[in-house]
Image 1 (cartoon, rainbow, N blue to C red):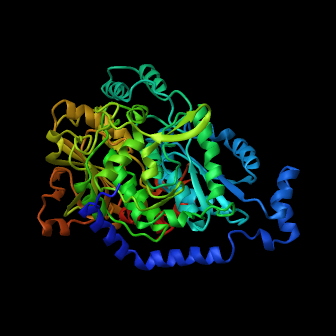
Image 2 (image 1 turned 45 degrees about the horizontal axis):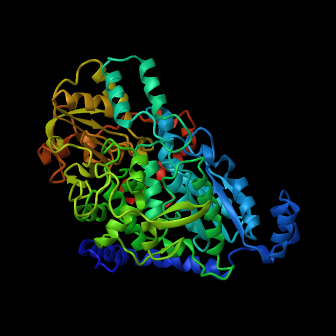
Image 3 (image 1 turned 180 degrees about the vertical axis):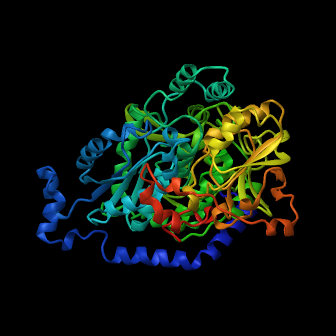
Length: 609
């Protein structure tokens, strides 16, 4: 694995290092100060404080913690059974506590964090809390670890905002040994491609609600992560390629002996990495570096991952004092080939990806091409080469072995020598409307350039109403504005995918431009999303009028409103009444977030303003 580092990878990484020197230095100084002050405060605790810490624990655990000899692990869990991906976590604490005792340590649930399901809130008011739930999770993680009685931490989370929030919160305790613990994807049900077809049929009125529900229930049918390659599974890829999962842990199904063995191994590794058992101490702050963040971006591009991470990964990096922007994503995209096709970028699901060679094959291919930094620290130790291996049970004992040399299915996973495309399929879009991103890996080449009149709406429901009324049977660019983080929390506009796909299939030239988000399942219609500055910040999108010609050129990265600059500047901006977005479904509580949130390219977070 001594392949020279790719020039683009080296250049972008050095740019990030140079840009981040100030905040990164401050972050590391803070972590070093916490480490010098002592990983925990147990040794200096008053008897009353210690009694509160251990009051509900079994007698043997109390004795071990009071004696200060055994490592103590804090568990932050995002368990609830609203989310199929998180339902398996229900019994993890019991398993982890038991195994901690078996290896001479102790473990305790330090706290729970909220975990909402975007699949339930899509198109509803709750989606306006979704992005900000990430920052709530970061705050809740910090609250759980603030008791400061732990030598190590385990993060139990999977889905869209949960892993980024856990990551951001855990980094504030980056002096601790920290391991992220996945639960795995549900077994395959109805194919994602078949599910999408039924959604389009329902949008056209060709099937009824009963048929749609039957289709959805056949796709989402068991414990585990949804099997398409959206944000949840992109999270799992990121945690593995950044070295925070055990090698090969991301996509092992729940309820299997291998999954349980990996869960037990996670606490073994967390305890070992404290340095208290004779091995080298490995802190989360040692793992999350400029190089590992770049590795995460590369993994996202090579797999056609979620566009949500053009926001989340920026916020996650900022929590470690690392400054990343969309120029970095775009430049890396030009050098990183697309090696995976998983729905919505193909017909396969993540189980097929895993069976074809999965993360081990992907990491080995990227390392062999100099497209990953191999000289990084991970929870498994120094170097990323360990992540070219896959876990298996050797007569019931967990072990790792090299993945096969060849892909098990080249329609799903390919080598660097024969990629699906030469680039990562993510484009930075720029022009007189501002800056946005577009994911083209699922967009056919003939649909990547759209020049058409604007249809301007302030809500996805308005556009759906026009579709249902038959008023969109034409070429157009849907301009859906006042969907940014300051306006209404930046909801996903996933409900627009089926009707726009129907119109595209009818032969119309259609595209979407919005200051909102699309799902991690962004599909086959070109969508320039996360447009900044947003409409409420007086971005140019606020001045677009129905009928204006808009060019969405995904090949050249051009997003242009064809209106004379003087005419555009003279147009008055009258923001709509957004009060309805501030009331109901708990939105009253998030006014402070909306007021202080940063732009998407800065992570859309009120925590790092």
